[in-house]
Amino acid sequence: MATTTNYGWTTPDDTALVKDGAAAIRTLGTSVDTTTKNLNPSTTLGDIEYRSSTANTNTRVGIGTSGQALTVVAGVPSWAASPTSVLTTTGDTLYASAANTLTRRAIGSTGDVLTVAGGVPTWAAPASGSMTLLQSLSLSGASTTSSTFTPASYKSYYIVITDTYAAGNTAFQMRLNTDTGSNYYRSTMALNDTTFAGSRTSGGNLWLLATIGALSTNGEKTFGAITIDRINDTTEVFIQANVYTTLSSNADVRWNLSSGTYNNSAAISSITFLAATNNFSAGTAYIYGVN
Amino acid sequence: MKKPTIRIYTTADEFIDREMNAVEFAQYKIDNAEAQAEIDKEAIRATAKSALLEKLGITEDEAKLLLS
Image: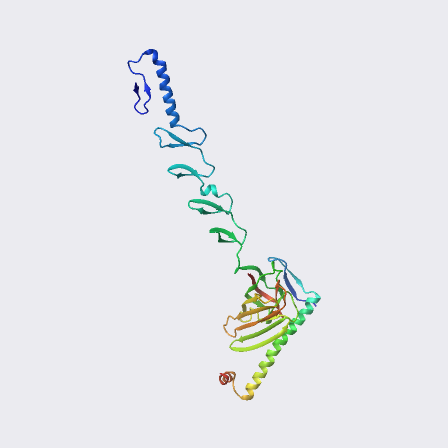
């Protein structure tokens, strides 16, 4: 019996009987049908086919899900997760949960930092050592008081004073928790131009930071850094203030270093800056909470 | 008599400016007295220092030299 060159379909010989023609055509048709189906096994919208290990036989791969990409698994094509399919939500990031395995990490909460837990990246609240800007106070009037800090449980506060001056010379002071009790114990070392002077106040009702002046008087501007720490002691707060007044003439500058305690067991929940005899004209106090 | 104005932050970003009330003004006067007392103390000390230097007939720099 004769066969075709490529697929070996059986065809009638030249000497075959005419009466066997119908059966021969059926046999050939069946062979053509089988081969065609083997080469085109698709059944469903989106199917693709690849050459299988059997000659003249293709294998069907059903379409993947939205965003998947065509990859290779065990030497044959396969649909697999892609960055596009894994990232489903705004803020998602990708990481490998195993070799060659994409996994989605949903975004954390505001203020979270990326850290490692169980050997994979994860978002978490900063454990410690972070500084948070609580408020930027624009100093004005005879005093400027912060709003109540939330939470009032920071271990320490760090305050930066910038570009501060008043309508005229005045004492620049600080008060915690609007407490006017005799709870402030301060020692100050003041350098006025090149002359040192020391002072001490026990049981004052506020904290004297420095004497500040007017911008119009020799271009005075005051800067400073203040730390307020309650780390281990529950009854006293340790205060350090480093306040410097610069003048455009670079002469007669003033530098005040004060250190001491605020004796009160209450958590620090607000800070007031006061200008004793002349109102603040300008200035900013940046208050940071430190964990 | 108009009392001094104070600024109070109600939130991290909002504040009100208002005149001191009676209690605040009373405290303001106490605070000022304390600040003035400190300034006066410094002034008295500076005056006494000048008087001593004059009595000794030396300058401040010479006094520093003596003490160094």
